[in-house]
Image (cartoon, rainbow, N blue to C red; front, side, top):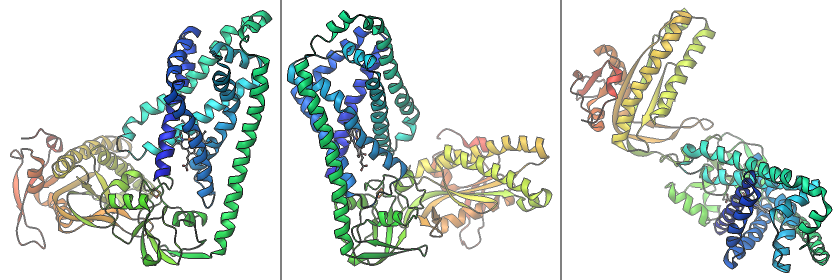
Length: 550
Ligand code: HEM
Ligand code: FES
C-alpha cells in the first residue's frame, strides 16, 4: 500500500517535471527568447529548496522502487505493457545521467546557469548526444503515459477523457522535439564561428568537466551495480524459497498448477501460461483477479492491507481473495470469478462477486420468425443477418447504459439500472427499446434492398427485485439476473403478440420512469404462474417512449 502510494506520488511529481520540461522545449517553436523566459520561471520551482528536494527525492525513490519491484516479482512473465514500463523505467536514469549531471550538478556545484542555446549547441556539435536525448524523451514519455494510463484506467471518468488525453500525449513530445530541432536550426549558422562557440561555452571551465565526468561514470557504474545486485538478490531469494517447497492449486477448469511457495496465485497461474484477469497489473486495485477459494481457505495467510481494503470495497465474502495479493503455502482449490478479459468496469459492478438482491429493470427482446429466416436463407446469409442484428442491438444497449446479460440464439436479455438507480434504469430501458427499434428500421432498409428481407421483433420490460450476480459456466461467466422479475419480463415479451404491439411495458416500469403513460393502451396481462394479473402498457410507436418526465 505504502509502496504503491510512494511510487505513484513520486511518479506524479516526475510527470509534472517532465510535462513542464517538454512544454519548455516546445516553446522553441516560437523563439529562443520564449524558451529561456519559460525556463527561468520553471527554474523558480525546481531550484527552490522545497522543489529541488522533492525532485531529487522523487527521482531517487522512484528508481529504488523500480529495483524493489524487480526484486519482488517472483517471475518475470509480465504482461507486455508491464515489461515495457519496467524496462523503460530502468533505462531512464542511465540515459539521463549525463544530462542531469552536466546541467543540474554543474549549476549546483559551480553556480553556472546552463541555457538552452548552450545545450542545443552541444547536441548540434555532438549529434550522438542529441540522438540520445531524443531517445530519452521518447523513453520517459512512453514510460509515463503507460503508468498514467494504467493508473487512471480504473477511474469511471477516464474513458470519456481518453480522446483528449491521447491527443495531448501524442502532441507534446512531437512539439517538444520540433522545438528542439528548430532551436538547433536557428543557431546552426552561428556554430560555424569558433569565436561564437567559445563565447557561448565560456562559463564551462575545464576544471568543471574534470569533476563532472568522473561523477557521471561513477553514477552509471553504481546504477549498473545496483541492477545486478537486485537481480542477484532475486536469484538468492528464489533458491531459498525453493527449499521451502511448493503448493498445488486446482482451478475450476480442471487445470492444476504447481508453484514454489512465495509466488502469488496470479504469478503461479501466469507462470503456467493460463490467462487470468488482472487489469491493474497485480497492484491490488482493480479486483478483477478475484477468486473464490473452494478448498484450503483456512491455510491461507490473512489478507494484507491492500487486499483487505479492496475486498471490503466490493463487499466480498470471506472465501473470496485477490489472486495477485495472496501467497498460498498449502494446496488449495480456487475458482476465478471473472473471465480473463474482464474490464475494470465489470469489476466495479456490484454483485460481480456473488449474487445479491437488487431492483433492476429487465428487458427481453425476441426476434420474430428466426426459424423461418433459417429456412428462407442460406445458412451463411442467416448468420450474417443475425450478427448484424445483434451488433445493432448491442450498440443500442451501450448508448443507453444497458448491460447485456444473456443471448439465446434469437433474442437477448438486458439489465438496466445496475449502477444508476431504479428511476434512471426504467428511463434508460425505455430509451433503449426506442433506440433498438430505430436501429432495426435502418437495418431493415438495407436488408430489404439487399435480400428482400425485413426483421421483426418484440420487447418486454419489467422492473423489480432480482438476484444479480456472475453466473454461467466457469470459463464464460456473465453478470446476469435470475428471479421472478426476469420470468415476468420474458412473458411480457411474448404478450406483444397477444396485444398486437411491439413493446409491452409493465406498469411498475412505467411508474418507475416517472413518465406519463396515459397515451398508451393499458391492459392486464394474465401471466402463467402468477395469480394476480399484471397491469401493462402496450406500446407500438417506440419513438413515443423517448419522452419528458410527467
Ligand atoms: C522521469 C520521469 C518519470 C515519470 C514521469 C514517471 C512516472 C511514473 C508513473 C506515473 C508510474 C505509475 C505509478 C503507479 O501506477 O503506481 C510509474 C511507474 C513506474 N516507474 Fe516511473 N516515472 C519516471 C521515471 C522513472 C524512473 C527514472 C524509473 C526507474 C529507473 C522508473 C520506474 C518505474 C517503474 C518500474 C514503475 C512501475 C513499477 C510497477 O508497476 O511495478 N520511473 N512511473
Ligand atoms: S490484478 Fe488488480 S487487484 Fe489483482
